[in-house]
Amino acid sequence: MKNSLSRRDILQGLITSTVVIGFDTVCRSWVTHANAAELFVNLPDLDGVLYTDDATREKAADDFGHLVRHYPKAVLKPGSINDIVKIIRFARNYNLKVAARGQGHTCYGQAQVENGVVIDTSTLNKIHNINTLQVVVDAGVRWSELLQATLPQQLTPPVLTDYLELSIGGTLSNGGIGGAAHRYGVQVDNVLELQVVTGEGELLTCSFYKNRDLFEAVLAGLGQCAIIVRATVRLIKAFANARVFLLDYDDLATFTRDQRLLIDSERFNYVEGQIVSKQDGGWRYLLEAASFYTPPLEPDNTRLLASLSYTKGSEKIEDKSYFDFLNRLAPTVAFLKSIDVWSNPHPWINLFVPATAVDQYISEVVSTLTLADTGNSPVLLYPVKTNRFTLPLFRVPNEQIAFLFTILRTAPPNDDTTKVRMLNDNRKLFERNRDLNGTRYPVDAIAFSQEDWQQHFGRTWSKLVNAKRRYDPARILTPGQSIFSLLKKS
Ligand SMILES: Cc1cc2nc3c(=O)[nH]c(=O)nc-3n(C[C@H](O)[C@H](O)[C@H](O)COP(=O)(O)OP(=O)(O)OC[C@H]3O[C@@H](n4cnc5c(N)ncnc54)[C@H](O)[C@@H]3O)c2cc1C
Image (cartoon, rainbow, N blue to C red):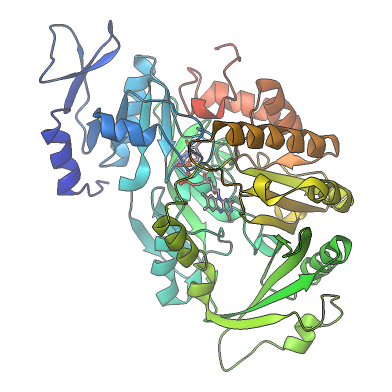
């Protein structure tokens, strides 16, 4: 059950003399050898390290959004699943809040805990067992690592996110959407079993057949009832290559109609799309579709493109290896890092727009949208079939088709005015979409009250509340989502 912590990690803990030996329940601070007072409670023996140094806490107080900061008292780098059990029991006893942090790629403090303990799952990093149907994997493993482990056996998870450097636990707490979702649902729909540690510090296994209420409260459950420590993820046969088609549209209604036609016929393995700025101002639309294949068999381009109404002659067709296609953002991310833009603030907005409203809603949005609003960053728009989604807490509009609409905004550094304007715009766009019966994909940056959450979860709100009362009655888990701040303790 032990996971490897690097010697560097352990040494760093020792050198900073922050090896925590206990907790002073009066001052509510950690006790180290250096500052040991007479009265304190002993920290349980850990296989990993509990860090209290400023640099580690600073990192855990930030995320990809760089919009809010909540400083934890300590960061656990677990050396085993048992460490998580021990720390959660300890935290529960001394009323400390706890949140798991995968790669910290949410945008609005979702993995942060003011004065509490962040569990950095990146040290839970083993891929255990791969067979033709499934893989058992620790929550801290990144999807890129999992894919690199399954591909040599010509196997792949059915759905992957656009960016692969996200943790298994992080996306399974949210959903995990990508261009194959119209066929296979989101990543949570492809989980067969989970091992979790509840807010009571109980290590439990859950699946559709065992502890189903817990399984359904954890998948897309925003970390509210348990920390995912291990997942069994479904695998399917992987193809060797992807043929990628990029098709231009001037007209929104034609674009969304063709996207719908493609997901309806399932001619492609992957369908997404973008709203792209025109050189002379305004917006055009780019349909992205991919057909996976293994030579000598090849996709039939004529059949794939039949009856589509893109701007003829605009099509770009390219073959890539399956891995390079899935990992297609890596070069862009490397470039953005090299010019220091990757670390800028990201007031992202992610919504699901009902298909019946999408043309009206997006027309309204793009009529005033400028590059200053997006920070010259991508705007995504693509459809999914809602009957592929099986988990109650993954909230989408009550229609057969919904469109994921995201503005991946980048704000300039040190420019609070722009950040605030973008956040206000997010709220306005969210409310307009909500009025049209749309929903939010909550990995983004939108100020949300408990009333908003209740409305978001709709008929599943009571299910979540009951699960919270059962599995995290002291409400210590994942306060950064601000879902249960006002709920009376049971
Ligand atoms: C560049 C980029 C591209 C993205 N592309 C996509 C995409 O294509 N599709 C998509 O669906 N999303 C996408 N996202 C959003 C992403 O899925 C979420 O932000 C996801 O939560 C990130 O995983 P993480 O490991 O960084 O999670 P974190 O940000 O670390 O955590 C997110 C939330 O999950 C909780 N959590 C983390 N680990 C666990 C665990 N083990 N158990 C319980 N709760 C846990 C945290 O407490 C927090 O509340 C993208 C984000 C970025 C920055």
